[in-house]
Amino acid sequence: MMVRTQIALDSEDHRRAKRRASEQGISLAEYVRRAVRHDLGEPQRPKVDISEIFGLFDSGGSDIARHKDRYVGEAVEAEYQRKAGRRKGA
Image 1 (tube, helix red, strand yellow):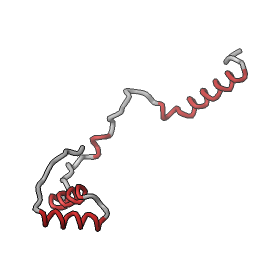
Image 2 (cartoon, rainbow, N blue to C red; image 1 turned 30 degrees about the horizontal axis):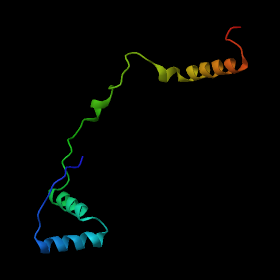
Image 3 (cartoon, rainbow, N blue to C red; image 1 turned 90 degrees about the horizontal axis):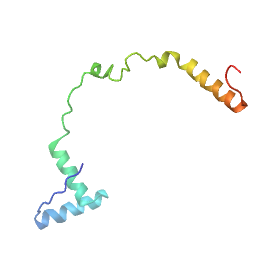
Image 4 (spheres, rainbow, N blue to C red; image 1 turned 30 degrees about the vertical axis):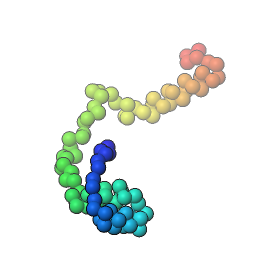
């Protein structure tokens, strides 16, 4: 998210910054953002223990992955029967 801000530069710094931005093919605003980022350095990312993400999406007993081939086969068979105008077991 960007936050709009206003700064004041003396005329010489403004002229030089605009020229440098132009040389790089970027806007003055982008030039200033990059200069600030460079001065501040990269933000420190918190270290996360990868094991914290395991089990986040546990469905509580569903075993779809183990039986996926059977489920796909049943769906294909049902679609075939539907298109053929038959019902399963008829």
